[in-house]
Length: 360
Image 1 (cartoon, rainbow, N blue to C red):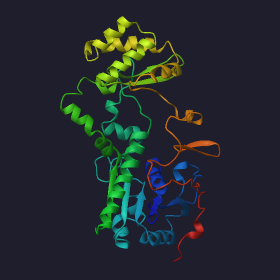
Image 2: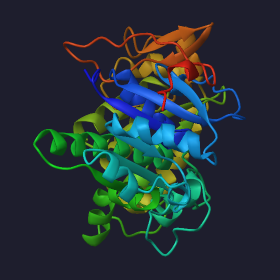
Image 3: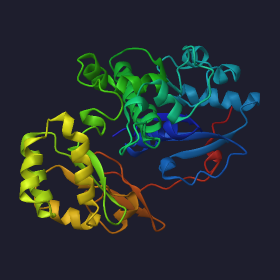
Image 4: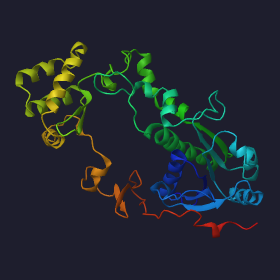
């Protein structure tokens, strides 16, 4: 789909590498620009890309990069503010070389915010962005839960980066000029939280962390540990699904009397803690697979918490979602298009395509 798109990706960490992977999966010609002493990059995030090495303190290598910029559509900058400027590759310089260039910069806090020089990782960015403050842990401790590094690095830095690049490219196709994209992951995390902010403004999310409907405050939107230490997730917000949930609990050993009481008290917030405790005790009587088998009979918005490694043997999501490379699973390109097939592409070795560098 994007076979005519040429992307230069300065080697970085998770978010910018993910942007490059998505664009490469969609067919773009992505070239990683790495240092000569870079570590091996044997990661699926680099599949389908080319790899060249440069000494960015060497004037001749900088000139080669500038030559490549002239023929490229997108440049992806993973560095902290000011790095490319010091290398002589500022947006001003690059846009003079190629006025149609999309210059995407992904940092923790943006190019111009008061925190722009501050170091950080995903957990720090989503802290400042307000996300971590509503990711509550389950159980008796009312504290934030760490959601891995999917939100800041990949949902914000990765997918929001892809979306902004594609939007800018459409603008170029319509006759507009190229532009600089300043994507701060903290700011992007706040952007993803628009719904939660609306809920707070309307006093629908105002009971403190871990005490609201969508953050583990209820018994009907929660995670329960099973007998084998694995987990089931419950998200039966609507009445019809809640009714099916109670039927599943009864099938799993809950008495009809207690089932009726739970059914009648879904929205009774004074009972939420007690009902969470009771349901938690019930889930601990069976393994996750046993509960999964029970709830397969009920349309209750109840699901097993699946670990990615389980897709070695399970097929919840259909064909061609997971693929194998050298005996290890990875996720195929998504979503599914009606007229485009994702190709299984090789992962380049560092500097594998150095012989394709342009000559000055």
